[in-house]
Image 1 (spheres, rainbow, N blue to C red):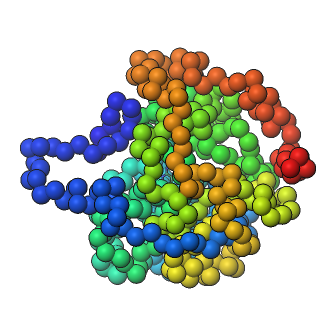
Image 2: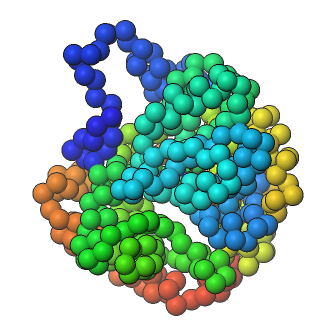
Image 3: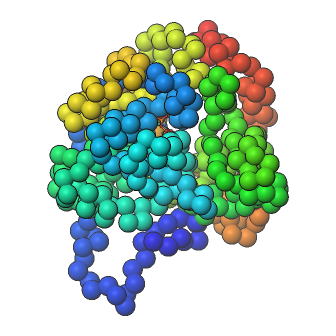
Length: 372
Ligand SMILES: Cc1cc2nc3c(=O)[nH]c(=O)nc-3n(C[C@H](O)[C@H](O)[C@H](O)COP(=O)(O)OP(=O)(O)OC[C@H]3O[C@@H](n4cnc5c(N)ncnc54)[C@H](O)[C@@H]3O)c2cc1C
């Protein structure tokens, strides 16, 4: 896999070594879409972890963590996305509860597969239990690579807005490191308050080597802004073949953005602490969820509500009209120059930012409900 001029990882074939067997094309999930089977319409729940500390360390309600714990407790292997030393997300394996923490929290960047599929296959062939959590395209890729169903494999995919390439995130991290004259050890896109676990809107947190944790707000939070405005997602993410109500994975997890939009849900305090959406797509997924019930608070909801305010569940993110221009400038300009040219928030966005910043989350949730 090599990075192209847009900072995205793509496969490159070494023609000196290639024997022309065509196996890569036979296994490519996108070229063999019709050979992979989607599950029927799922049962949908909203849920959150009872353990408030673990919930604080998760992006939404922490259901991904609950699933991972259950697999570890059964003696299985958990595969998920963690930062490498250079802050490049890659799939790693956790075999103990302590090893789970790097996998928690969403990294809004393309995750590298490295040799994960090969290692997962060998674990599966040895009869071991394996959980793979990743983007829908990677779940499809894994299934296609394996070539047959495995009873001892559980797959979880995320509702996915799309991923930017690792090169773009690296350029952003280098910009922050120069600005603060310090090395970043980890980056939390959507932090929660340490004191009470409430979601901190419109800011990220960088953990610097010398300065420690630092809030990255508004102008400096430009990578997340560009991500949300679809400025630099991978080209293929604008034509995603993995989204939809019927999924390839056993379980789908997401934020429950539309909760309460179609049917009342009045637990305000819970909403500000993050609530997960879980859809149980297969019998295997349903059986696993039944074993989690003592760790989670949950309530059945509808698939329509799960898709509400979360278009990425069923459709690809549209490309920003400025995306092509961004990529023309991406190599030439510094991140600061790119920020000035492309990431300047509108007046409305600035007003919303300051309102969010100074309004307690619970009040803003109540206001939204009252307005509706
Ligand atoms: C690129 C991306 C886009 C997303 N877009 C949406 C969206 O539009 N709407 C929505 O509701 N939810 C989206 N999500 C999912 C959401 O951010 C949460 O991950 C999800 O709600 C689960 O939260 P959690 O608290 O249960 O788990 P968390 O503890 O936050 O972890 C979730 C799991 O995500 C996996 N993960 C983290 N980063 C990556 C990555 N880069 N690639 C592959 N796997 C990863 C980890 O392996 C972990 O197991 C997106 C996630 C990613 C990675």
